[in-house]
Every structure is written in structure tokens, then in C-alpha cells.
Image (tube, rainbow, N blue to C red):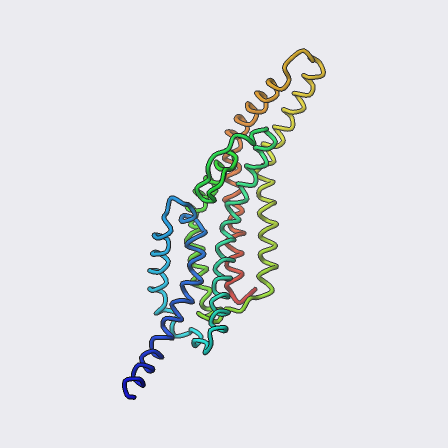
Length: 266
């Protein structure tokens, strides 16, 4: 009887630290799995899981004093961990949207230039994407890392424990409004980045149409493709710096979105 009581007491002592660790791991894992620089198949899943476990273990002692007591039943425990995963996914997806904005611009440009068949493998999504979209996506990831976006994401994750202690995440209606605002901002930045190249390609298509009307004996398809390719390369070289400047300037909006979600001033 004494051994059973001692076993129950030991289990009770260990249950709360394990629950806090699982809560921290559930909140940090999406950020470490989905956001750059780990958002690529070149980093093995086991390595990402090991990093997430190590960071969560080191952070558990910090948030243990403010953590919510472990729920008494499996249903409430599952709901608590689901809330942690939801918050982690929300914060990670905001940084993913930042990279997606330039990939969206690249897909639009490639479609206008007729380069849909010119695709390459994207290690972040395991899919084939247009070459221009991959190029702009890599540029967005590099700028994001140079600007410290990955550090800001981890900072938001750690600051979230002040408003939402471990195991006490309650989904907020304001999250949807903030996410919808950031989603619209993603499309706006993508359109701004694609606007110079899209304008040049539109003028190239108009020039091709005028050539087809005035010189119908020419092979308009071959000439038009060459004109589009030339306009694309020239404008890409000229506007790549401005695209990076726009992305760098607008990156603060995505970082601010993370901060708004985890602070009490939402």
C-alpha cells in the first residue's frame, strides 16, 4: 500500500512538468517546423524535432511558475494542447505569408511572360514552382533572415507566455481579424512587387501585337516569346533592388502582426 501511495505521489509530481513541457513543445514546434530557416527539406525532420525538444526543455523551467495546472481528464488536456498548436501555427504562418508574397509575385510574372513551363523544384514545399517564383522566394527568405525575422518570431513565441501561460491558450476572435489583415497585406505586397515587371511585359505584348498587324509574314510566336524573355530579364535586373526594398520596408507589418497577437493590447 505504501509503495502504491509513493508511486501515485511520484506520478503526481512528474505529471505537471511533463504537461508544461508538452504545452511549450506544442507552441514552439510549428514555428521551428514551418518558418525559415528550417522550412526546407534540406534540414531533416529529426534535426528539427531535436531542436524543438531542446528549446522547449530549456524554456519549460522559465514558464513553469505561471503554467496552468494539468487538466484532470484527457479531453481537456487534448483541448489545451490543441490551443497551443493553434497559436504556434498562427505565429508561424504569418512569417510564411511574408515569403509567399514574393512567390505570388513571381508566379504572376512567370504567367504573364509565358514561362509557366519553366519550373524548378522548391525544397520548402516539395513541389514544382516557376523559376521566377523560386528566385523571389529565396530572396524573401534571405532578407527575412538578414533582418532577423526568425529571431522576432521566436521572441513572439516566448512573449506569448506572458499573455497565454502554458496550457492556458484561449483562441481569440481578434486573431482572425489580424490574420485577415495580414493576408490582404500579402497580396498587396505581391502586386506591388510584380507591378514593374507586369507593366513591362504588357508593353512587350502590345509591341508584339503591333508587329503582328504590320508584318503578318513574321513568326509572331517566336518573336513574341523572345521579346517577353528579353523584357523579363532586363526589368528583373533593374527592379530586383526595388522589390527587395519594398519587401524590407513592408516586413515590419508581418512582425507587428505577430506582436499584436501575443500582446494584451490586441
